[in-house]
Image (cartoon, rainbow, N blue to C red; front, side, top):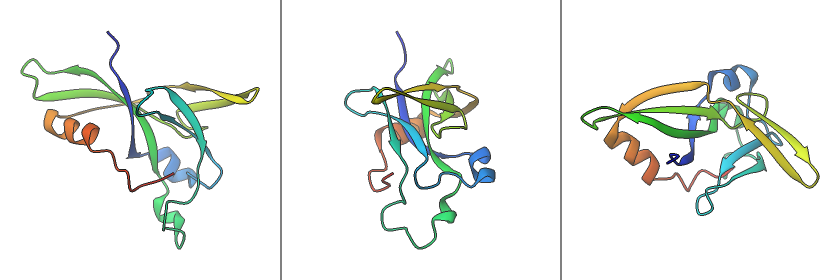
Length: 127
């Protein structure tokens, strides 16, 4: 059975160096209810228009659990930056988009931290 993929904001060194995301940048996210990827155009974070460069490098990532430790206390995961031109290539196909993602980042965290990240979406941070 394939593990679910989620969208969560994480730091991306490559995007930070490139000054991304910028307004208008295409980004792929995972739909909450539908669990299907969709593409949006970045806009300034809600209420944070005064200094958008402070948010460079903090981008939506697609993340998925790849393994857990024998005692289930640790979770290994892989992540892909959702910004077009980083770990994701977004191409227009008619009136829709095709997105190819490369899961280039891996990490490990405690199960309780993973559960908090997955169960508590940051609904106040709008793209």
